[in-house]
Image 1 (cartoon, rainbow, N blue to C red):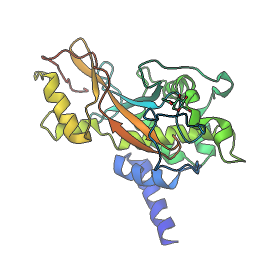
Image 2: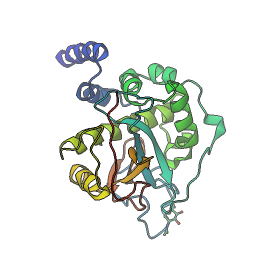
Image 3: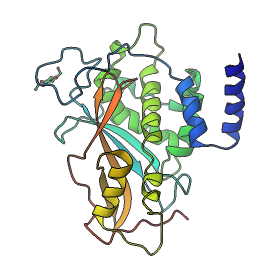
Length: 268
Ligand SMILES: *[C@@H]1O[C@H](CO)[C@@H](O)[C@H](O)[C@H]1NC(C)=O
């Protein structure tokens, strides 16, 4: 009762002024389905024998890549935060599948989230999962159709019986948001004294070590015209994409940034 009142108060506050911490709290309330999978078993990509139940073991795309943008031209999202690009399954070896099930290319992700009790997730996405041309819904649909439909632990036959159509896409969005909330690149860099600047330049190793301190692993850093614009954080997964444990790992491949002279321009 009290908790309910507190959560509705938070919901009001949160919709008035989007805030990562508050939305994070709300996020926990809106988990839609649970997988029933054990999270103490073998991590994806690390098995040495065949694991038959790919509802609880992500395969073949067991290397999961959380990708985030730093968009400055045009800018997207808050000036003090990176934004979400997506979560991609890689076959543990830099090959990957895309567009695995056109029958599940849902055409209204926002409506699915609202209908399935995940409006807190949707609110968060509207602030932090931004398309560079302003078509956020189109980006979400693209990310789901291209990458989410390839995740074995999200096959419809893996969902609890009676799950509504699209429940796995809702779970996908919730997981992407959860991972993003735990991978705050802006503050990771800021804690090492690295904030957006029109004049400063950094070496790749300086940026990497700041992020290694923040996350315990080294991500891959991508640049466009010498400016940092995308970061990839890699994970192995124990259990399901719905509610499993994502173990961060060092990037298995280098990003495109040069070794020195890297800019990190402000969003303005
Ligand atoms: C790991 O498990 C997957 C899923 O069952 C299987 O396809 C793959 O061959 C296994 N890898 C090894 C090295 O046994």
